[in-house]
Amino acid sequence: MGSYKTKTHQTVVLILSAILSLSLFGIMVYLFVNPKNGLIPLVFSGNKNPMNRLEANSLTIGILGKPEDYTPLVEYLKQQFGDQVTITIDGNLQTSYQEAKNKLADQKWDIVFTLSPMISVAAKDNRYDWVARMFPQSSPYYQSALFVRDNSPIQSISDFKNTTVIALGDFNSASSFYMPTYDLFGKSLQVTMGHRGEMIQELVKSGKADVGAAAYEAVKNDPSFRIIHISRNIPGSGVYLSPNLSDNDQKAITQALVNAPEKIQKTANYGIDKEPDFSYFIQISQKAEEVLKCADFTRNPVNFFCSQATTTSRSPLTTTFTEIVGTVNGLTKVENQMTRLTLQAKDQRIYYVFLTPGILNQIPNAGSGLNLQNKTLSITGVIPQKQPHKIDKLVITDSKQIKVLN
Image (cartoon, rainbow, N blue to C red):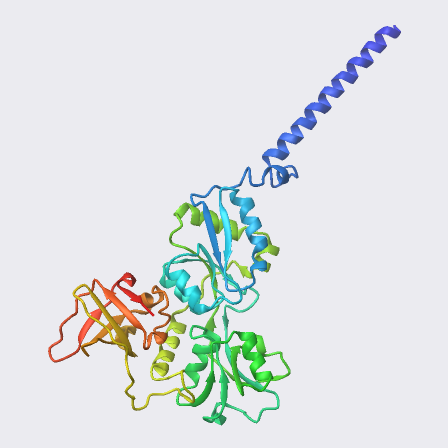
């Protein structure tokens, strides 16, 4: 009897052990195939078993901010796409807007955090696709501000004189160049330009500049400054994907960016939202260029209006049957938002070169067109359109037809 009980007890123990083993095995299988609910996939869902596969073997993230802010995003994307994709960050706080526009024109950046609406427009002109909005905690639109030291006697733009020193940003900056320029029409000022936001603030604080231009949010709470003018609305910047990526890769990258943990999105300064309307801003920037077409930023004071043109010496240029090389000695806006460049040849022949804003954004080192003044251009594949008793026309239909030589 005792032997029977012992055998029965052993049998029960074996059955229970088998049930326990099967249960543990079942739990492990469940965790493995349900990565969202288990812990084991943290070990197995790394680079060796990425959630998605890309056709591209490398991704370049273009930025104009601090690289360390995008390191968590890179690590997250590596986990999503695996070791077969090399992910690099290109750019930093010292990257100029023109450098960024050159990268976009050459489509060197696969994912771009534009930071500025001017760079967003350049991305759009180069067929990049919208994914998300930068500065998601702020309004989709912001303003530019002109500011002075708190104890400055300047109360408004009407107090500006030709001895007033104003600190501006890069040619391509919306808040520190284009919008202020639009509001400075008719003024003659001492200008120091090409500065980033922090430097503009420092120039005003130190007294090296009487007035500064910056994004309103950046200076509104600084008690050492006083705001004297606020601009019209400026659309915010965004995150864009290169047209060089395949449709499948664009979808996979978009999904990864959208589903990234909140902390990673916050550090990289983006959030999911629809693209703002850039149309009015583009009109403002084009009108600002009308104001600037006669401004000479190589000498002070700078006139934010047109006066009698002065004759300046031009670089020699040559003309061949297949190539027209010339120096730009004039720029203006014409109907249908076209930019017209005046190109002068060695034999003194003059050409009018017509380009759209979109094509300008696709030409490395062209910028908005303003910095092409006195530059030497090479134009190929364009037949001059003869105009009776008028200047011959060169209509650029493809960005590859024109190069900036110096």
